[in-house]
Image 1 (cartoon, rainbow, N blue to C red):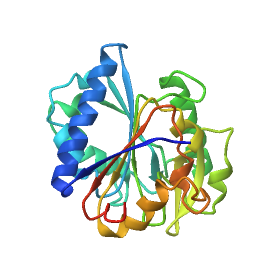
Image 2 (image 1 turned 90 degrees about the vertical axis):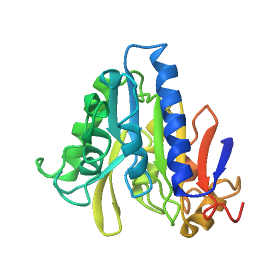
Image 3 (image 1 turned 45 degrees about the vertical axis):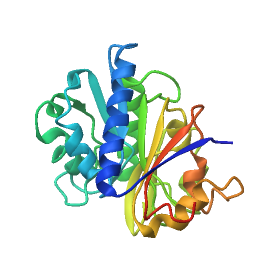
Image 4 (image 1 turned 135 degrees about the horizontal axis):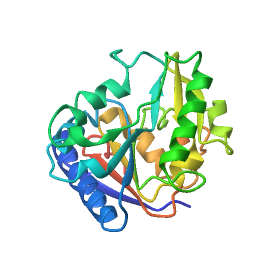
Length: 237
């Protein structure tokens, strides 16, 4: 059973500041123990301001490998691309621009399955462990309880022996990390914002909730999961 530490903040601004502080603290701690640090970022609107704040933090970004938890199968310059969002935020200014960013190859390959296979090989090359181990995994929480691109009642939830897979959500093909590799992360942080997330957040922390309905329940690292939730999202807990 996963343990959760719920960190309640007032609004999106406080959420961004708190998350930034925790991410920087985590990076600095890991850099004391290893030469390079591997972190995985989430897409969506909530983390955008966090990545802009991070880009200006004076940490040794040249020693940090940045990955994505999921990506839509669209060109990298598409407005829905998570890679484009990271490039326009974290990588847009000094010193964040010094990080090594490993985006998911998409439409330059023949199909989403080829993209997933390519990205899995990249993870195994850059991260230690089997499944690959991230030092920090940043996740969002969808209104339907999905995280990364692990959507309710989809085949992606059944994948246990691969570290990436193809999924479909909101009529869009996607490549996503699977729940075993996400759960192998040393630290997992969920970012939750907005009143539309109230039910999903309540279900996430409910020990009796069905993971098929709320796939975020599948994330079970050895360490405590941090949930940073603003006031409007945490009204039911």
